[in-house]
Each structure stands twice: as C-alpha cells, then as structure tokens.
Picture 1 (cartoon, rainbow, N blue to C red):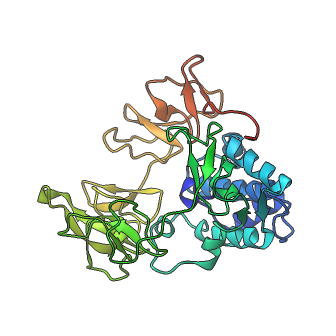
Picture 2 (tube, rainbow, N blue to C red):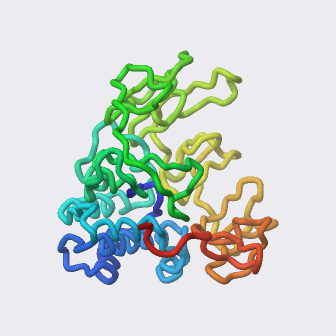
Picture 3 (cartoon, rainbow, N blue to C red):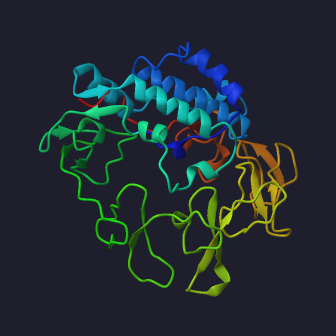
Length: 338
C-alpha cells in the first residue's frame, strides 16, 4: 500500500513534533489506518518543507487529497475483510522517520539487505479474501494480488473492481524474468551488461561494479552511466555526490534532493529559491518553484492561477483544471469502493 517514493523529506526533530501534533502522537502505535496515514502525512509534509518541495506545512497538508483507495482500505478493516496490525504500522512509521530525516535520495534506491521496519510497511494490513473472491485492492486479498478487470483503471482516482488471484512464483536469483518480472525478495529484474535478456539480480554494494541501470546498484550507490557510448550504454556503480562533489548530469547522481548536477561544472549544486535567476534549460529552481523565463516563480497552491499548457505552475499533487485555470485536485471518486 505504502510506497516511500511517493513522499518527500525533513529534519527528525521537526518530524517528531509534527507527528505528535497531527497523529495523536503519544508514542503509541497508530490506533487505526486513518491514524497511521495522518501521521504519515505529517512526516511527509515536514520532509516536503525541509527539502523545499512545499513552502510550509499548512500548504502541504492542503494539497493532500482524500483518496478512494485509502477509504476502501479503512472500510475493509472496519468490516473485518482486512486485518490491521498496529505494531507493524508503528514499526513502519519508525522506518519512515529514519529515511525521511534528511533530504538524501539514496534511501529510495534498492538495498541489498532488507530493512525489517521497511518490510512492516508492506505488512501492517493483511487481507482475508481467498483466491476467486472480489476485490478492489491487493490488500484485501490473502494472496496480496488483486487482478483488475480493467487494467487501465487507476485506483488512486477511481474504483477498480477485480478478483483475488494467487501470485506468480517468484523467479530465483540468476533466473530469466523477462516474462513475469517477478523476482525473489532482495533481487530485481534487470538486463546485465552485455546481455539481451532480463535476469533477477541482487544489487551490488561494491563501487566500480559494471551496470546498465540503478537497480543494479545498492544504496548509497547509483549507476553512473556513460551516454556517449551510443547504443551500448554502460556504467559503474558509484557513490551519489554530496553538494559540491562530482556528478553526472545525464542521470540522478546527487545525494541531496535540493541539488542538481550543473552541466557546466559537473558538480552537485543547490537549486535556486523563489525570485532567483534561473536557467530554463536546466529548470534548476527548488521544487516549490519553476523557472519562468529566467526567474524562479513560486508554484501555486489549491485555487491558485495556472495555465493548462504549463502544468509545473501547480505544487506537487495538483493539476491545472482546464475549466477554471486554477490549481486543483486530480479528479477522483469520493468515498470507499464497496
């Protein structure tokens, strides 16, 4: 249900303060799914402000839309279709507090060794619906696999009915995953350097290991690709660059989300704030702004003016409504799917 990559960053002390203010925050495990996501939102918004995705916490919280899948999950818990584990939800929050305590991107790339608290983020709800039963979410299924009737249906915006099915057997490390692309835990489906087929591979923890994509490099390494080699693009696993360090402008290579790789200096350089002179080719403003002409302009919150042909004018999580030319939530169904 929860994907760490779907959120942004902050300081640990601020996280704890805001989580206490918004999540019931006495240190006890979250009492419900709703309580869990209130605390997640608090942590996410602290991170967003600290890493300049959002101007302030209140604005960030105002961009978080009610989603039918979360309402459906809570309804499943209320009905007994889904079992909620408060202890594992608490462990998941502990994990998020750790990985969101800085603006570093490396916690969001593959790890060679699984984090038990990270695993708790996928285990704090358990479905009870057997194979063949109806579902709207994977979390409702005992198999954790809900096959949508309409593959094009987007569950974050609408109700997507399906059927619980048994998951495919995972492919072992070294096996061909070209068809199912379903590898055993701790490995990923990649095309190794020089190969033509997909293989399940454990990401490398060693600098200098040959790679063709970041999934082959374990945190805090990334795949430093050389795009000048034509069709045979290869690279090596290297450490993400700190501010001022060497970087590769062709791939995400800077550790801090507030940095970009300046192609002129090939160093990780801090993005620019609202009002600063920017480069429209690089779009090198902090994420709460965008480069208009040569000036970093603040993105708009809900109700702010925008032009549909320039979607970056709205803050992350919003779209420019064509009927009103204002920043608004994405269209979505209301309430749980039942």
